[in-house]
Length: 181
Image (cartoon, rainbow, N blue to C red; front, side):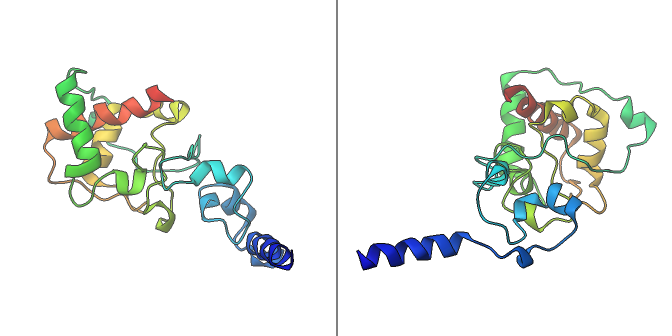
């Protein structure tokens, strides 16, 4: 009986965090850094946003973030590739395996929810591609430009080694995440 009581106390104490352990402003805790806990217990609504390093969480939707805007000639661009099995397969390969300097899933998560294993170290959480509300506002050309050139201040690197066709295949695949949600 004594062992059960002690075990119960250990579990109770391990889950409790003192109020003074929280840091950051209220907006930081509420916005993109919510997934880092800031000393709060591992439970409640936060749990569903981040658990599983991109596998089980919903991500944040919509995200309050600002990124550089692509020049007008890019904003007008539409993806020239057909939505077919071959292009989607290639896009999926770039997202999960083949991209350099790193694969997309490392930051954006294997489910595209912006909660990849490197997401927590970023100043700005990676884009949540599952958020229909946000994705419908992003032009194909804007995505192309960001992938090609990166996004200063966000941790998004430039993918200069991908050809134009490979970037368009990647964009086709990325857009499937919002359709699944």
